[in-house]
Structures are given as C-alpha cells and as structure tokens.
Image: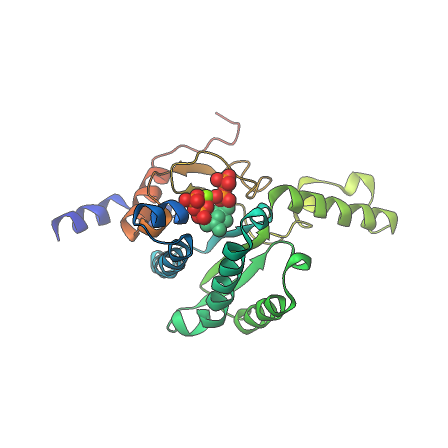
Length: 245
Ligand code: IPE
Ligand code: IPE
Ligand code: MG
C-alpha cells in the first residue's frame, strides 16, 4: 500500500503524455531464459499488451501505438512468422470482448498489401466496428517500417503532384504527414523500448522527430503497470524544447 501511494503522488495526472508509442521487444530472450520456445514468449507478450492497453486507458492516455511486426520481421524462420501472424489474428478477433466495455478504438498501420487476405479483412472488420469509439486509440503497427511509410507517402505525393492535386509549394511538413500511414494521429510524446536495445529498428522515423525516448532493460513479457508508470514519471521530468530555449 505504502509504495502504491508513493507512485500515485509521483505521477502527475495533469501532465500525461497524449500519445505513447512502444517497441515491445524481448519476447524471445524472455522465453529463452525460461527454457521455453520463442512462440511462448510471444504469447506472453500478447497477454502483457492487453494489460498495458487497459492501464493506458485508465491513465487517460489518448493514443497508444505498439510495434507488433516490422517489415523486416518476415526474415525470421517461417514457423515463428506464422506464429506471430496467428497471435495478431487472435488479438484482433478477441480485442472487442477482452476490453470488457473499455472504450478502445483500434487502427492498424503498415503495408497491408503484404498481409494475408484474411488478416486484411479482420483488420477492416475491427477498424469498422470500433471506429465510432472515443476513449483510447490503440494503433497497432503490423508489417510496418518507418522508411516504407515515408516512401509510400512520397509515392502518393508524386501521384498527387502529377494529377494536379498538390503544387510544389503545397508540399509541407503537414501535407507530407497527412500522406503517412499515421495520418491524423498526433506524433508520439513518449517512445518506450523494452529489452535494453537502444535503437529505432525502423519504427515511426518521421513521427518521433521530437518524441522523448525511454529505454528499459525490462523484457516485454515482464513489463508491468509500474514500469509504464516509471516511464511516464521520467517523461514528466523532462523539458521539451523543440529547438527553442
Ligand atoms: C519482440 O520480441 C517481438 C517481435 C519483434 C515480433 P523479439 O522476438 O524480437 O524478442 P528478442 O529480441 O529476440 O528477445
Ligand atoms: C523491433 O524489434 C520490431 C518489433 C518489436 C515488432 P526487433 O527485435 O525486430 O528489432 P531488432 O532486430 O532488434 O533491431
Ligand atoms: Mg527483438
């Protein structure tokens, strides 16, 4: 109880990040340390995600973006890729029931052309069913890459220019951002990466230009509410200057 109380006084509810992004890393190492298969690590990671989504909602966070599968993750053994695809399908299928009435709108970002048809239909179904919900926006990055996101926006822009939908001077930071997969989503205030790796691994490269970065050695399946609180407390202690003084 005592430590719980202390945590609550540390977190400032008036200065919550509007948007938290998480690179959920370390499932494989978590499993290996326990003599389990990597798949079991991913399954545990998926359970943890549900808890963290709920906590973000409870804390009044508006947007949570999570990196579930990168464009580069296809290079893993087929068995692991299949397992990850299955877990993501299960997550999407069960998401509405498991959120137990918590208002969560789901949106998926990434290159859908590279996903199995049944997954694309499931994504469309969940997005449509939750589109009206106001509460927490859960953005799941599946087959996502920051470079691919930027390239795709460039292609859209080139097409719009060719067809006179935009002029050269109309190409601005805002009009470019509106062609990214994250269109309409504010930039992350706080980016968390678990498992001790200190790199972006091609996540939200454009969008994290001014995000505060938080790295922890905790492996994703071990990540708990208290670790989320720690990250937010760190965030709240930082001064964001955006190039000014
Ligand atoms: C993160 O855990 C999940 C995905 C990348 C899909 P990893 O599978 O990368 O776990 P480690 O980094 O091997 O421990
Ligand atoms: C980033 O983790 C991708 C996801 C968490 C989905 P990786 O484990 O794929 O990244 P690297 O290989 O360590 O850079
Ligand atoms: Mg990893």
